[in-house]
Length: 87
Image (cartoon, rainbow, N blue to C red; front, side, top):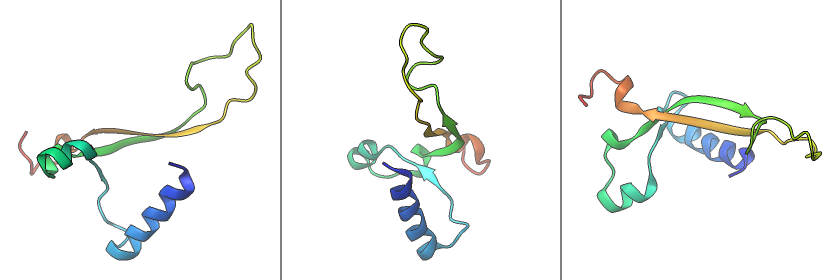
């Protein structure tokens, strides 16, 4: 997915639900097979621009050109950060 596409969907969600809607991540296949359960969601834990992708560092043998940056969204279990949910 391109950043412009993600922003378009996020803007649509914000227009419907407001700017303070909580953002969770959920594995689509698991939700389809087992049903949606908030206990199985993940939360965004970090967002970074990464340039050393897919391999770190620069080759000393081959000029690889300028490495494009990628936006990487990391996630972790949402229940770890919500004291109202028991693990």
